[in-house]
Image: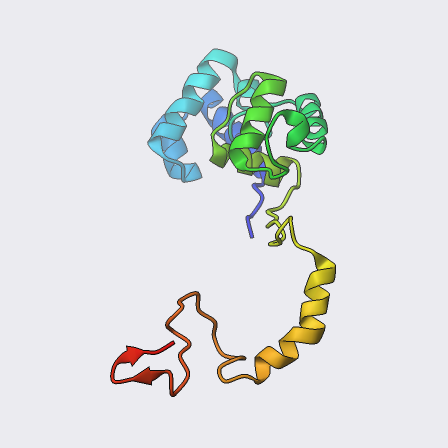
Length: 184
């Protein structure tokens, strides 16, 4: 589980550094007192010199700003809801590269497949789905008849319930071999 940052505590620490700079403390004093790196103290000092203590308030968020707005995400989700074929793809299967293509078509913002998965998962709440494994040309009636009439006979034969093979020579019953040759 990912821990949320305490933005209020982070802001309070930066403001404390600003107050220390106001009182004449050095960057080294801030490093020692607040337990931050020299680089952090240097950045805070530069911000404090340019914008004062108020400049150290922060953005109240971590990381870079998202490249897609909430409005753009709504448009993307509407496009995705139409399905892959309505978006110009030959089959009804979403892949990350197809979703990335739709995002780019709708928003003019391109993403890698990794970034696309992150958007789907974290911002749109989608999950990975595996397509059902079935033959499109399957005849359910013929399958039911086979299962009812033929399967009971098949499973009673030698090796009938065993592991199947596509090899013509792998299911050889005793008596079909004679002197190393198959008679048939």
